[in-house]
Image (cartoon, rainbow over all chains, first blue to last red):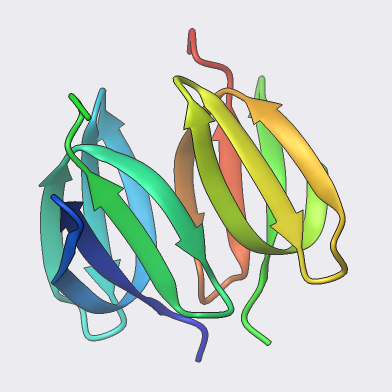
Length: 65
Length: 65
């Protein structure tokens, strides 16, 4: 499977938001809905700073960074 | 490998931007740098409308949509 883990980065630290994310949908300006392969959902307010799919990683950060 | 194909969507049509994308980096407001597993790069001006990693797909759209 090719899902990725979603992280929140702040002050150089990364915190796991949701593992095994399949879909990421833009719901509005700076608002994202994550759904993983188990059907779990999280909403994230921020922006995507980057991702590496080969490393199974999506990183979000605060909008004002 | 868990790369994804990047598409541009406009008026209901999707156009391939770059295949086998590994990394997506936010370079500035609405500016993205895509690099694929072959080392090819593309810059995209727009926003991410959504992605499905299980379907190997990332979709970008114009900022003003």
